[in-house]
Amino acid sequence: MSKEQDQAFARKGRITGLVIAGGGLSAILAPWIVHVLGLPARYEMLIYFGALAAFVWAMVNIYQLWRMRQNSQG
Image (cartoon, rainbow, N blue to C red; front, top):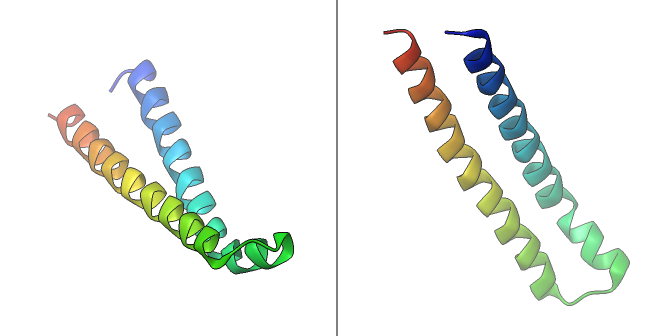
């Protein structure tokens, strides 16, 4: 794997990790955010769906990273 490919792989992995952390944190804090802002419960569900979308996006990227690693090893 070349240096550029290695850097792209690492960058994609870092972004995926941040998305997973952000999605998890938003799902954990959703009830608190809705309560503090005085929003209806439907907004809490909206935050949960956003977190779910982040997790699905992350899983797709993890699969792509796995495929990139498999292809680079020959």
